[in-house]
Image 1: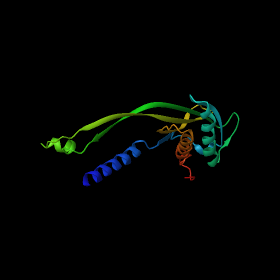
Image 2: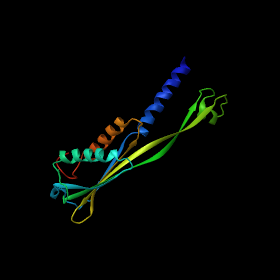
Image 3: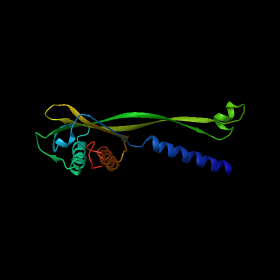
Amino acid sequence: MRFKGAVFVLMGMMLLFAGKLFAQQVKTDFDRNAHFGQYKTYSWEQVKTKDALDIDRIKSAVNAALAAKGWTQVESGGDVSVIAIEMTHDQQTLNTFYDGFGGGWGWRRFGGGGFGEETTTTETYKVGTLVIDLFDSKTKQLIWRGASSDTLSNNSDKNIKNLDKGVEKMFKNFPPGSSKR
């Protein structure tokens, strides 16, 4: 009975760590010399993605985030030009499981014997990254960049939800230095 309990605890810990490993990552950076108070409007310059269905989804998420910050979208000639790039790549992770007989790695290391076996499997999963760049339309200088990465699902609704959540996190403290935090 104790053995089964230990196995369940170990599996639970692995799932907990796997959840953190696959958690959405969001990063932002900005030009420290840019005066974000002068920008009130934006225009879409380009959305690059392999999935044409994602173009409107990306625009919708970014439009909602910028509208919440008081910015207005204009068809062309905005104070800021927006470029979005969505990309995917395969990622791999190794999972090693011990059968519990023989004490595992630590037991063998310190002279213990046993009949333990370990099994290592490779898991391949797809990671999607969305990069949003904001450029000063007059100077053509990059003033802000946000990036969000997450594991992609086979479920489109889940991916859309994660896209919206990632964009929301990107723009949480936008514009930099503002009191709208």
